[in-house]
Image (tube, rainbow, N blue to C red; front, side, top):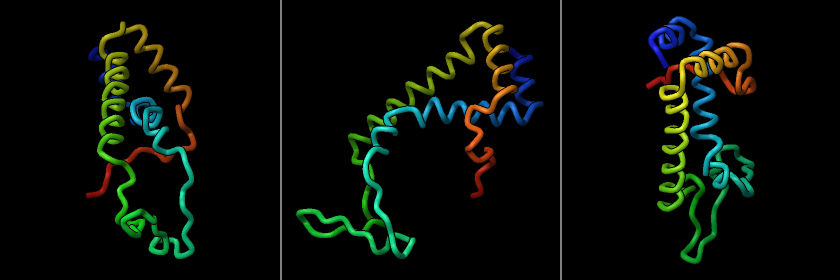
Length: 124
């Protein structure tokens, strides 16, 4: 990415939002997270999952206190996320400017995930 391309991102909020979605999709969503997402999700009559329990050999665990990933799964996920993020960053900063221009053109013409919410700054 060159200075002109960085300036374009700074001046085009729609392009920046679409690039953000692209990075989230390709550096997080399409990773080992998909393997962790497979399975049956519980339903809750109360809506807040206070009525959902997991039965283990050591007793019941309320859904709100249950860890969804173990340490090994979290490590695998984060290694995969870092590798995918590296791939996206290399595509942006190491490939030729003409490729980045074409990529930005395709993002300006098409939202990579139009069904997703628009990116916004988190509220702290």
